[in-house]
Image (cartoon, rainbow, N blue to C red; front, side):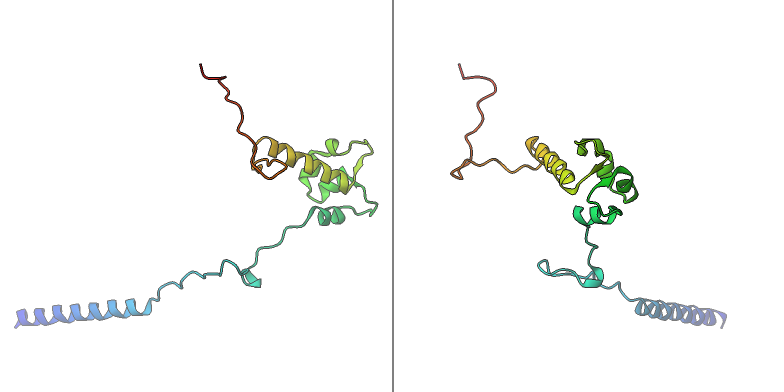
Length: 143
């Protein structure tokens, strides 16, 4: 009788464990699928990335004296690190302050210098729209 009791107890334990495992499996829900957005449409407004301020907006916010001339201290207080690091280069008149036009001129010249070095510059085009001729062979003419 004890063998039969052991068998019944073991089979009951297996049934109980199986039922418990099935219950846990059924209560666990799979994670929700990732949200897919139409590539042409912007993401929902509540999930849109914050827009970056333009240089004009940053300049206006930093220019607390509203005189159109930004001092190095004003730029530093506004977190305009790019301007702070290049202040002497931008302040060509040595007035101790820089205008938005002066900042933009240095930005433009740095962008042009990067393009001349080949960092993302578009290939030059001839006046008629045709691509320029290839550069001459660096090794000289063939012999």
